[in-house]
Image (spheres, rainbow, N blue to C red):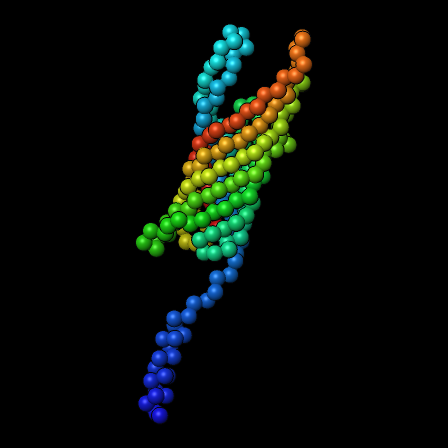
Amino acid sequence: MKKITFLLMGLLPLLVWGQTTPFKPVFTNMTELGATFGQVRYNNGVTFSESVAKRVNLTAQTFNGVLLHPRLAVGATVGVDWYNTALLIPVCAGLRYDLARPNNKNLRIFSSLDTGWGFAWLNEDVTGYKTTGGWIISPGIGFRIGKPSNANFVMSLSYKRQAAEADMPLFYNELAKHETRVYNRMAIRMGIGF
């Protein structure tokens, strides 16, 4: 009996050591600033021909959510996108998922998905114009450098598709003048996360 008790007492630390504490959901944030790159096709009103131009615009966003699993965060993303003809505020539902953590170092690769609606709340239109926002979707990939429990440096690359519409002033003999815009952009952002 003494041998069995001694053996069980010897194995007890191994049983306790094998237990892990359950994961508790915590708040997470990623705040980023960057640039969007894309091309614009537009009609030249003077010669009635189509032109293509490259555009670089400023973008900023913040993701606030809950880390539901050590690798999955769910939350909301709010940002500001400055385009040449519109200032849009995207309000989106967002996901962040850690794809890989190479060699358990402080580098984590993640994917992101934001989808929602862009609003033109801060946009100032010229007299006679009315700009409204539209549907937005933005998948991306990036990396974080830093310990999971501390602040991290974040860098990401994403595709952003933002729809918008504009009503324009009418000229002689016109009944309606409406423009549908689709901003297809690649966004490069840097920021911090915790």
